[in-house]
Every structure is written in C-alpha cells, then in structure tokens.
Image (cartoon, rainbow, N blue to C red; front, side):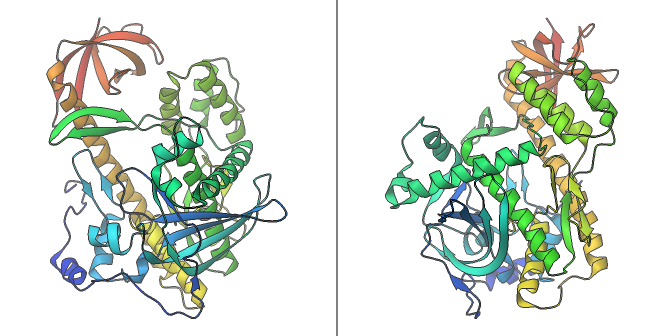
Length: 470
C-alpha cells in the first residue's frame, strides 16, 4: 500500500475527530420522512458489517412495483474537508486484501455509526423508483428519510432459498411478511436484468477467489459465485445509480459519472470471437458481443470465465469523469446504460460520498459543495487510486495463492491455458482456482487448451507460481 501511496493507517487528527463522535447522526429536518415502519432489510456478504444500503418493495394496483433503496447518510458524520474526509479523499476506497481489510473510514463509523445495522434507526438518502412489468423504470425521485433495518441477511442463504435449494434463513421467517417482500424484490430484479441484457449489457463471469483462513492458517481459496441474491442487489443498485444521475441532471447539478468507453481494442475482440467462428461487426456493438458471450457460456461453461477475463481486459477499465451533459451521455459500455454513477456505497467508496453531498445539496436547494475544477481533479484522482487499490489487492491474491501451494511442490494438476504469447504461457488450475506460469513445455499450447502441469516453485512475496507441462 505504501508503494502505491495508499495510507494504511489513519492520522492522529482523524483519530481525534473520531473520538469526538459517540452516537449516530440525528436530524429534525422538516422534509425528513419517517420510513422506519417499512420492511427494510440488507443483503450482503456473510461477514459484512459496513452495510451501505437497504431495500424494500411495494406492489401497486397497476402491477407496477415501487422499489425503495436506502443509502447510508455517511456525510451526516463525515463532513467535507474534515480530517476523516481527508483520509477518505486520499485513498478513495476501502482496500480488501487476503491479509487484512483497510477501510476508507474507521470501523467505528463504517461498521457501526454510519452503517445501516440491523435493529438501528439511521438517516438515509432514499431512491424511489416505479418499475413496470416489462422492467422499464417509469419514474424516480430522491429524498431524505429515517429507516430501520429489520433483518441483516446474507447472499448465499437468501439465494439458496430463492432457488428452492434450502429453507428460508432464520431472519426471513422471524420477520412477518419478509418472505413475500423478498420474493417480490426478486421478481422485479429479474425484470430489470432481462431488460438490461436485451439492451446489450454484457454477461461476463470472471473468477474471484477469496482466501479462507482457519485462525492464522490459510486453508483454501474459495470462488465467489454469482447467485440470485447478488443479482437482486446488483440490479437494484444499477437502477438506483441511474436514478441518481437523472435526479441531479434534472436539478442542473454537475455530477460524477462512472463510464466504460467503447473499446479501443474492438478489432482484437472481433479476432477473439472469430476463433469460434462468430462474426462481430467492425464497429463496437454491445448487443452483438453479448450474443457471442451467451453462446460461449452455454457451449463451454468451464472455460467461459477465462474468455470473460480476456474480454474484460480488451474492453478496458472503468473511470470517473465529471459530466455536465443534458442527454445522459457518456455511456457505460459494459452495462449498456447512459447516465450512470456510483452512489450506493458511501462507507467504502469516496465517489459515492461525493455524489451523496451533491444530492443533499440539490435536495436542500443549497449551493454545490464542490467547485467544477475540484470535481474534475477528484474524478481523475479517484480513478487513479482505484487502480492502485486493485493492484494491491491483485498482488495479495497472487501471494495468497503462492502461499496455499507452497507445500505442494511436485504435485500435478489439471489446468486450462489462459494466456499464450511471446511474453509467456499462463494456466489456471481447476482446483484450487489459481493461476501460474508454465516455464517449460509450452510449444503448441493456446488459450483454452486443457493441460496437465506439475508445480515446481512458488515465491510468496512476489506472488509467483511456476509450472512445467507434464
């Protein structure tokens, strides 16, 4: 982290500020709505305590559904230009490594006083959306409210229940009406997802393995699988982020946008598709690329994550920009949406906290808290620091993989070739899901080939794993 100019620790000034914060924020604002009686619930990872959002749904007489997304009002305690804000602005994101988590805000805030924890009344910014039966968002608005999390739920338990593979989680059955509430939310999320993919949103599926520890001992790398509950939250957050941009645009407020430009290396993507006899048009076309991806996942689900990763690299990185346009441009190529931002995770992403401050100013009819030049600088800075954080996380994932395999030198594994070029040949083991370099026996190997390899060395500090072809 230090090499990447990320601060692993909070300054003494920030800690002094923190010591003066003893309770969650309260507000007697005249326009604050009391929505604590609604069946709000959070769905997140099993071990997450920095809860940024809650959701609830309401079926309307015309069969449309009103979806409400509550976002933690972090700005209520973390004031602009404070020492705590300075640390958040420097790092711009929480850094999640295999060894430890380095939060953007102290855990006293992010996992407690600014978290939408179960059983707590909390201030929030609420995004209200009316969604038709065909998945079209008919209308949306934003307002401030007091909310109450009635159940802290986990992705895997909710997903297994929704899929009919397990009974309802205990907290679902304990809260009257929550089961029907979640099923309604799932139906709406599926409609939103179908519509987005009809418009060209990309079905990408890369492998993200989390380190599993038994005390201090690294015992496994577990692949995080997509599931219905994760998609539910993902689809609602995408819609909420679009609604936030729409609200700010309607108020004439400049805002951050999260964009993914049309791929400059599109012709290379065309070449990749041609390997499987799939023609793509000469100009970037998200719908055509999505059609190719759907076919490949169905034809070869085993190697699809590796194809996805290749496409992700060719498309390029997302970035933050200041946008003052009136038509919702610029676009997000991967999501097939215009007018997209990050607003739903202010406890762990600084761009979301910036957006929250812009929203609160717009709601109050107050001046924008950031000058245009400041927003332009912060857009580039947040993009740069996000990249730094991802490099730290990736380096630690490689080190965790090397540590896991350190005692298995000489063992043989089934693998898939994930990269083959003049710079080297790389393979991903089927189990455990780690990647390494093939140092001998690479002749004739190409991406997608299945191969047997033997582990010959690891370097934990640098995250190197070397194999030879058997």
